[in-house]
Image 1 (cartoon, each protein chain N blue to C red):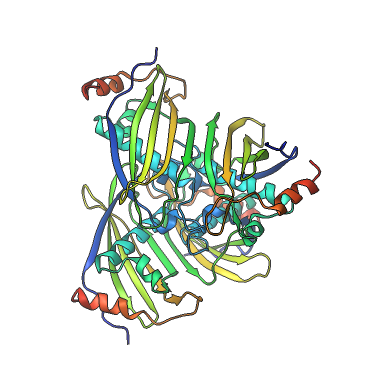
Image 2: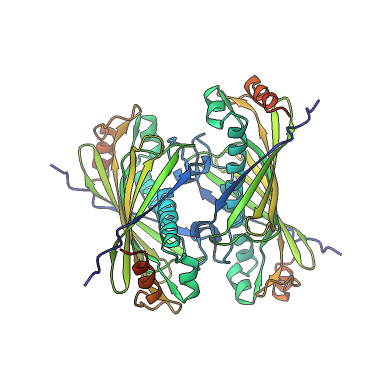
Amino acid sequence: MKKPPARFKNVTSYRVIYGDTDQMGVVYYANYLRWFEKGRSEWLRQIGLPYGEIEQQGFHFPVAEVSCCYSHPARYDEVVKIETELAELGRASLTFNYRITRETDDVLLATGSTKHACIDHAGRVARIPKIFDDAIAAVGT
Amino acid sequence: MKKPPARFKNVTSYRVIYGDTDQMGVVYYANYLRWFEKGRSEWLRQIGLPYGEIEQQGFHFPVAEVSCCYSHPARYDEVVKIETELAELGRASLTFNYRITRETDDVLLATGSTKHACIDHAGRVARIPKIFDDAIAAVGT
Amino acid sequence: MKKPPARFKNVTSYRVIYGDTDQMGVVYYANYLRWFEKGRSEWLRQIGLPYGEIEQQGFHFPVAEVSCCYSHPARYDEVVKIETELAELGRASLTFNYRITRETDDVLLATGSTKHACIDHAGRVARIPKIFDDAIAAVGT
Amino acid sequence: MKKPPARFKNVTSYRVIYGDTDQMGVVYYANYLRWFEKGRSEWLRQIGLPYGEIEQQGFHFPVAEVSCCYSHPARYDEVVKIETELAELGRASLTFNYRITRETDDVLLATGSTKHACIDHAGRVARIPKIFDDAIAAVGT
């Protein structure tokens, strides 16, 4: 029943600030989830449907599950590349996959995924809105 | 015009986690502002008027100005003591002062203050609500 | 080869501040990972081996994997209960499980786990230090 | 004694993510200090002296004082422009001024400043290193 996911991926980047690091001298593990958010936000913008517009239409995609595998630490002032793909599109849920690499040498830093529910303004589970399906179709996947 | 502020102070505490530190091995400077928020939140609870209640009554106290002086770095796993006082109470604004010390030996870590506007749900400047004045009066300052 | 994990659990709590929430009116998903850290930090303190001491002995437990399942949103000013258990203890790794509930009514907010590598100061994989095994043994699990 | 500060300014930008906002629907006040850090970090890169290099030379510029005036709230997905200038250069301290505006229409969001001490690796107050003076001179201010 799950539709085949979109084939394209979004690529964006972020430069690590001091405030992202911890006393081990590397980026604190929770901050990778901020990068995932940036990734899916840019992915949505790329299909022409910024998340703010989805919210204006009365829908939210709250995170239901997240996982992250840390391969190599990110450090201060490094630029990380965030690659985002739609991994799965259900009736009332969607899953993104992420790949974080160091821009200078493509070393893999982390991989992860987030599964999102689709809910309406009242907080009830809702079918993925048609504007989303249309946007996906328009990018020709 | 400014009324004399309440005389009592709230004292609360917080234990530094890894996520609060940065690669210099000390708490990142922006995180002190989270402690200020915790301080004024507990101060409001102590006068019997949790901030959530103020919001339910249709008022918000957004921060208009903040300042912080850093005396000594806070470190991982230290317990910091947060002392909060109402420094000034205007018609449509209020100012809190904060003092952050290390609990084990009372070393001063930082001092600061936040000035807040009072606005209503529509975002217009509003007079400090009567429930606030009443709560202040009730604690006998 | 995996030893049976310790049977006891640590219970600690945290009150949500404004800075933890996002514009959906609930706690931002990355902040649960800060609570996991607080949980395992208190778990270690409870077995008599605060994490700072482990670091002084020349060992670190960086997070290798994290996962979190969000059941119900945490909101501003709620007190969340953080329960932490050691789920697995390997030769050079350990896994904690977490359960986040709302203190007032025990509603389940989230469950999660973190898998940690054990490394030495040079960043090499290292055997879990004896002080850790001893501390575990001492709490009689 | 204070030397005239450099005349040029650095301009960089940042797109607000969900994780920067709070339940009032605007960016949490502490996060502006992250933008200040990004601003001064890019300022230093622009004079050819990234902060990481200063640290490698054995110096740190910890924040001694910060202040911020909030004029207008920043919101989700807005791009903010961060302008940074060196306001004052002392023997063992330096001060940056910041101006945060909304990129689409130049509305002023906040202004602020940070005063930094110069310390060496042992934590002692140190004279601003010559590499800094040289870098300033080289940009012809």
